[in-house]
Image (tube, rainbow, N blue to C red; front, top):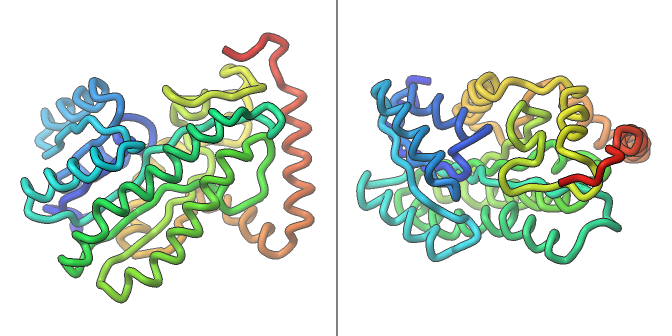
Length: 280
């Protein structure tokens, strides 16, 4: 992690979950970190706690759905620090439910944050990195962006798009001296397991969402952050953590039909644990 000392890092969705764990690990490694989040109060509290330990961490209020605000935040960071070494496009929301339960507002919400939010970050930071001749963009997707899923079509669609964007961009960016990686977490113990601050599920209660997540042996967020950052430093293209989730990715590639049968079994399980009480 010594390679991160002194690096300038901008991370969206950095106030909680995976973002907060990445922020803490980056700050401890000596990086200068800007936490960007809609939950500014939570971001500032985290930044203060980390500053009390000697870390150089700053909080920025940012809604990734706003491209102008994103461009302004990145420009201010570069003006202050002189450059940007890492952009973690990490902000995301989960809107679960079978396709027949999703409204157009649901689709717009998840696309605006999970896909357009990533695009807005790229638009703001990538030209600067090209001019620098260096930098690393790390987009957070999900295992839902690599395999067949059930009861989360909107989330899966956006995460597949982020994977595709990252793979294409990695090829192009390399010619400019810029690196691109995509994080594909399995189940990690974060607030998104119960919907998160801005997410929701159209057919399963928050309590049952946690039950479903816990059944998949979620990884601790701090452990995830440590392993993910080590893979970033190795410049891996597609980063799957925990590693055992790679088995499902290999299954998807080797036998799409079997992967879909696995997703069908997961859908059956989801329906079995659906709460009799309408989700809040």
